[in-house]
Length: 227
Image (cartoon, rainbow, N blue to C red; front, side, top):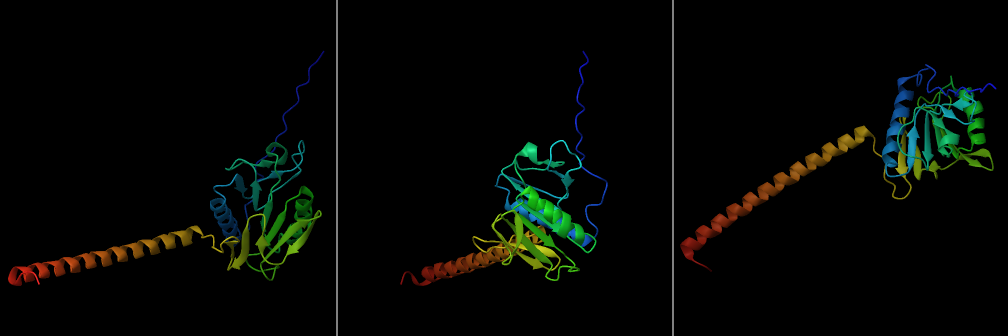
């Protein structure tokens, strides 16, 4: 009797294709990943960018690669690829940084596939405004179909999305605070350091003035005694 050993199925983690076609698209992807990673750092969630999402076990060709996807209820951290049947969770939010070259796929194949997989929200961002006039638009899954999000609110993320030049800006729904980019965080840190330094200088000047006043009072008492 001959025993047949099944060959393990290989699920590639890359296809040799570039992550995006222009710097604006790459920057929008990385900026979105970093903002959401910091925002969700205390959550049981992971944020992946341009990595294969496998949605059918045993079929390595059944895959797609969202520019950004957010998955809740899984171990935080990176993955070489994401297999739904292993992790047990479907991505809740997907982003595509789109252009005229990817319009047909982003608006056709991917939009249909993401709805079939069950991704709750799908956002398209055209950083150059080449085919989406308003640059940003979102869709929410309702009864198996995507319907437009008219107020820019991502209920899945608890954030409001706006266009900020060639990037997406994110604002918390609970308190309205903006999620700061690494550059904005660095600038804010410098501002706080400058404010702290100015406050310390003011306190030093006040202490010096108080010491001078005390010295004058001491000399007065030496000459005239207590009032």
